[in-house]
Amino acid sequence: MAHANPAHSAAAAHEDAHDHDHAHGHVIVPWYILLGVLLVLLFLTGLTVAQSQFEIYAAEVWGWQIPTWVNIVLAMFIATIKGSLVALYFMQLRYDKGVNAMLFLFTIFAVWLFLMFTMIDLNGRSTITQWRGGEIVEGGSGVGVNREGFGGAPIFVTVRENYIAEKGLTQDEYDKKLAAKHEKHGYHDNPNSKDQSRVRTGLPPGLFDDGPWTETAKSEAKDEADH
Amino acid sequence: MATIDSKASGVAKQDPLWKRYAPGHHWRNQDDEFDGAKIGIWLFLATEILLFSGLFCAYAVFRMLYPESIAQGSQYLDWRFGFINTVVLLISSFTMAMAIRDVQLNKQGWATINLVITLVCATGFLAIKFAFEYIPKWSEGKRLGNLFNYPYATTDHEHVWWSIYYMSTGIHATHVIIGMGLIAWLIYRQRKGAYGPTHYTMMEGVGLYWHIVDLVWIFLFPLLYLVH
Image (cartoon, helix red, strand yellow):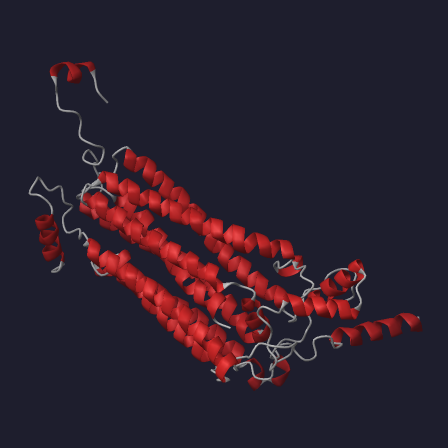
């Protein structure tokens, strides 16, 4: 509350000396502080964008492989600073009674608990009991949401096959269209390390290979034939 | 509310609404009511933060499970639209704070201007989102979950990425729409003189809500658009 009075009298000094209908103890944040915070926020936004563009540039032009987690940590760090500025100055936590700040900080702690325990659990799923690993393999097992009429294939396969059948395309025609669609942003060509920053050219290997669904389809067809 | 008597005898016109405001009888004074309202709003904002943390947790989980699909999926998003949206929301947060400041100093004209700019920024945010992001993507077949219909997918869990994208930004956009309704209500009441230096509780509340909406977007933007 000590800083409320200087701000109060400063604001009073700014305005003309008429009957001040001031709510007691309410701080009026000076406009230059609000504007300054906005400019800092805009600068930090630009910084975040510059950082991610730099990562792509470094990977493509110099071949630097910056691990993905660096990107995430940096981006979240800058976002936390921006969030703190908004909370402290725009939401006036800095000038408020402490109870509001405590509520906010406790909520952040609750979010941290939520995310931390979930991620720790997920990370260690298959470490202790191998069979619990199951489908939680890196990159996924290729079994996804099924669409009727295609016997268990992942949805992206179903959609692709339907599209090719509908338009009557050959595989070459489809490949050309695929390359044209992804020309602008490309795709990774080194899926072995998920932490690696990727130079984005070429198709991922094994894109058109058979997957677990073909085994299922084969054994199901075999069962049908046996009966 | 001029009566025949006041017009005839030249009585000074009635005080504006904000001067005539009296707090509920269970409060010692207006400041206590304001503080109580503020704590209540912060408790509500706590629930909002936890709502969005569920979406961030989903992002973290699916990023750990299907890193390829998430990485490839974020390639589909144009960071420039996200950047413009971030700038628009930051400016709207600034004008919202300025509007509250104007009401505290009884600059009602400026308060209206700032509130209107906030509303315009919110509309701009939604316009950019729908016209340049949602509609082009949805029509190409890049949809969530079982509705996925994009024939040129290159990763096996792309529909999961689109679910994350549409749910996070969609729930955020819903909050923006709700905020727009609240700000429109504020403009209506402020034009009637309901808010002034001694009573601006409603403005403070809507302002805090709007800053949370902005805060969530500040975290959503790098996670969805910038991190590959």
